[in-house]
Length: 501
Image (cartoon, rainbow, N blue to C red; front, side, top):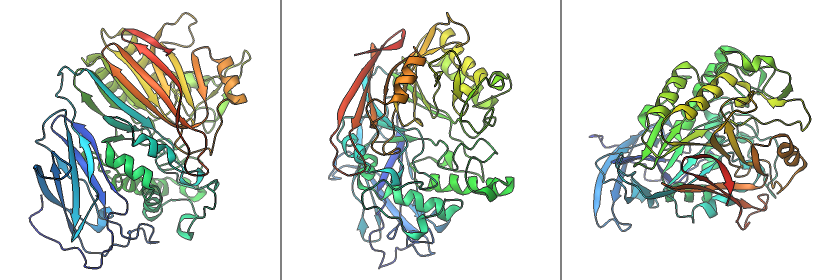
């Protein structure tokens, strides 16, 4: 809490144009978020805010009318962090819903709803959450979030590509970009504008205000297919190492400025700590990993599908980095939770794109990092208790896949399950069944379902069963699409692999 008061300008307008959010729930608290931005797409990236700091007050209550306030305080929104605030609330009761709001000057924000996790190890009968990824603004409307906001959920997990650094195609009916958003984002101003563009969408704001979120990144928050200190496929001049480090620092800062993340996730230059764990009683533990920042650059090219890439098997190739890999396997081996949920960015299951005898595999995903995959899945096979379920984004497709300990061994056992969720909007309207999907199913017996519509995945789990419902919309290039459950798959406690419900 700050002791000094910094008044808001009298002509501030609506400072909460980007909404409010909460996230990172623990048994005794959450982190809250907002960013003051009365003109969110102001070309300078400062959201229409003056240079001066502004004191932002917050309240947390047990009821929506704030008759019983249980926490209040203030945070200072400064120009250095885009006038964003991230107050971390502690001292709350476990396993219950709360309401929160902000005030800047005379303006009060909308009311948000959040919840704390059950106490560590406490008996927890069930939970429900959704996971989402890949929300290119220029590709379509965020209609799926309108439906997600109406779900009965405890948590939302976002697995990356929250923004896209560039708009390659405009599929929205009648959409156009202001000049400041036409070029690829390479600096802090550019990335701030991309986040502001996304967060100005009312369906996304509603989903943030309704549930706490856990958020990570994939590649498009920085640069397409970037890997550690190597740039991806973007602007040529930023392939120079000093300029790419500067670009990463800008991208990481903009991400922090726009997400409900704790101080532990505040970037330090071109580095940010994103692998972390959050528990939900004795039922589930969420392990969020970072498959971009510490990886070896992609084998045999830029990550596209290739044949006969022996470098994939090199023992020193890593998608996690040694420190994160050790942290991950130690946590999987030692957790007492019934379900281990791995928040993962790129596909872990072997994904052969050639139905013939050859293996045509993309090396940007775990198929390019065999040693790390075998280590993680070997741990899942060897540990005494628990069930590993991997939730994944990136592909703009719905998949269900059994995960095997070692794909080079024909009798290798199934040790875990992967659910890959489609995009919110990336790729435009999509289709139910495609020729590419048929080829993927024909080439990969462990992949049990494929669909290329847009939407999100809804999960319900208890101590006996995990259930994933693939919620899809028929179109995103115009608003108003209805939602349906395209397919449902379940995993039974102690029985790795999924079956259709």
